[in-house]
Length: 121
Image (tube, rainbow, N blue to C red):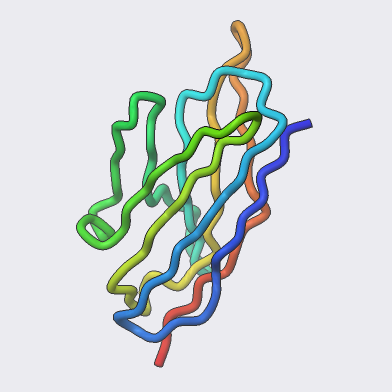
């Protein structure tokens, strides 16, 4: 059974930093990408950062130069991190990790439970 467990959210002042973690276990398919999304109140969920199997990464424009996505592959567990620096009030949202992959011809998508990030003074 696939499980994604997120941690690391919280309350921080503008200019501060947080590090989100998402541990994915029970993966029995080929992972194509690991990603972080976020959803602010009244807004649609948006892609924040994505990392591929080859280590290549991409970011939405508003976080470039401030956020860094990385991954760690350990036995039976893939962990994806999001280091968030120079946080702004507009970064306030619920952050979700996503695992996207495939098993034979079937597309697989799993989501974490979400972790709240609140930035305000």
